[in-house]
Image 1 (tube, rainbow, N blue to C red):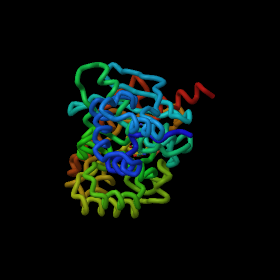
Image 2 (cartoon, rainbow, N blue to C red):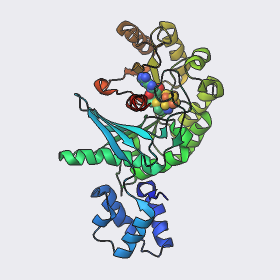
Image 3 (cartoon, protein in one colour):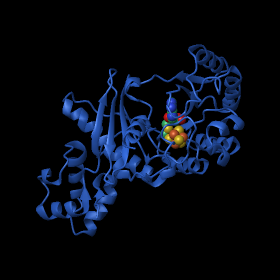
Image 4 (cartoon, rainbow, N blue to C red):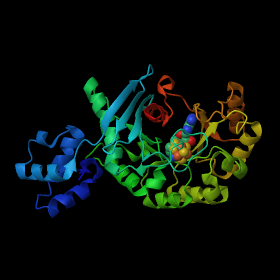
Length: 353
Ligand code: SAH
Ligand code: SF4
């Protein structure tokens, strides 16, 4: 029987578990200190915890469930980890150095069922959801990598933009967010965490109701249904007339800024016409909308798409700006090490087959 990952429990869940197993409540805080402040990787290192309790924990939980297979470091300081899960599946985690801090991009599922036509993660269908412990442990692995370097650096930001659709693994996602956000643990501020979704409208309502203060990003990629369905088949289930009201609800409920991601695909969605349509679509919410224009990262399986030219990117950007829409062109990280999520994994899988 494989044991449960200890990183998957919120401090309340751990407290409850310890009480149920005849242990003292304060042990939960001690265990968390060892895990998240001292960042040990075995129970035997938890020296202030009595033998009985350690034995009990060891019988039921694992600390390490991820096995790093490849660690790539790019010239710009981006670090990419390819980890093997206990069942043999592979996942990716990326550390990016930003002006504002150190940001980690985590994977939430093995593969993705949404199957967007431009994405490396959607090529293979979803094999399974990650449990929350596996998502938390990705952050721990990166933090431990930083600890080893000895410069006192801390992961300060998280983006849930790796392989998988986070809203298709909602409960594990929410548990993960609570664990990394807890001040007794990694204490990563909710405002420093961003969850990106392809637009599962019902989950956007649920997410808004949770009132977590976590940022939300929507992978929009097209300003009209015809084009959006062509590149993202999820738009059939949740077309713009379902997605936009969910976003309006989120904005009304949280009054938080929302990011719209838009990958620029050469001659597909990058014409001035689409920029104008996008500006119109976002007009009524432009005080809270922020468009992230993403240069396409070519995926060898999707040869039909090419990166937009510099000129079209600029024209698109200018058109949005002129129409009062806040936007930036996303800075790229680690292009020399298969930076787009899913690329390293898909390369490894191809080698294996
Ligand atoms: N499933 C979620 C989160 C993971 S994808 C979502 O779709 O939002 C995270 C972001 O990476 C999305 O905006 C996605 O559209 C983008 N992305 C996927 N493949 C890409 C590629 N080849 N080049 C650039 N961005 C890509
Ligand atoms: Fe899945 Fe996001 Fe990739 Fe679409 S872009 S296939 S939703 S990971």
